Amino acid sequence: MVQAGDIANPDFIVRSFQVDSNQSIERVDVIVVVDGKARKATENDSGPFAIAIDSINGDSTKHIRACISGLVYVIAGSNVKPFRLGKVGLEGRVVENQGLDLAKRVGIYIGKENEYLVGDAQNGEVILIKLG
Image 1 (cartoon, helix red, strand yellow):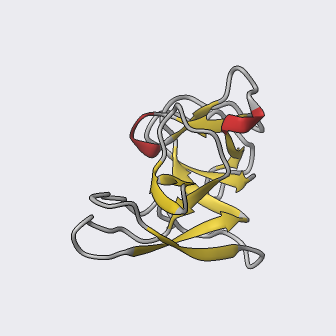
Image 2: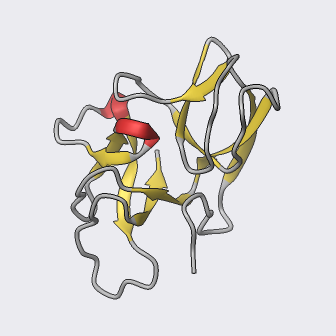
């Protein structure tokens, strides 16, 4: 069974980023790099975005690894329709990008694990997105 934060294909790119001070980032959070330092993304941020594949507490480490390209499992922060663009929502989760603002785009919702016919994702479900 897949978990949020799992990478779904062999064609992915992971990078290590310096973390902004006092940041707590959970595995699967959408992150953004601002002024050379990573932090948990908010709905007001513009990309490019990455998905954290490690968890950190602001006091414990100075770097975090994140997936910047490929297929990765994340947590839906609202209902998302198949093949729609996703953006950052509350708590670093992915929500449907209703306005089609490409600067806010995290990726495209592809489906869920072992799903034969792609259906709508519900809030809190683990979903597969293609980053970028």
